[in-house]
Image (cartoon, rainbow, N blue to C red):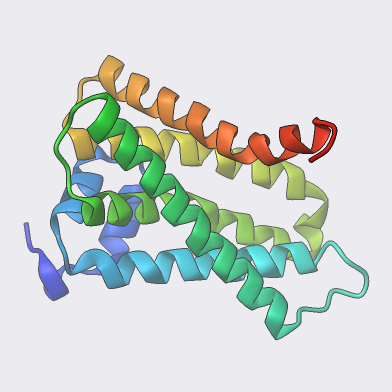
Length: 184
């Protein structure tokens, strides 16, 4: 198995799309995969911008909107990384490098690439289905990443990911809940 700059992006991308545990383990262990990880997250942000622009009439896409979606994709990747890393290391006691978790989570984002199909005019009506499918696919990819990162058995990986999902939902919903409290 090659690592470093000699390891191509496409085989890794296909491995991530297949939710292969070995691919996530390899990416986490290879510090050269950082650039590849960043490329994936940026492309996902650009494709999401294009897909969301197609929902409006006329479908226009300003540069600032693309930058917003790319930034949102990068922030989301870092949020997932922090949550998964804290869950795995602090709650479940695994010793993993933060950078490895970041690279693996970024490769799990590859499952959002097919959402870019929603930018194709004939597929715009299927936007919601594409979003739901890629979201579920992302959960399966995160499960593969969790197994690869923490070298965990099925149940332990499911527990780590379950706690991480609950924490992510809490982070997402907490600001909404605070708005419901009088005086905030």
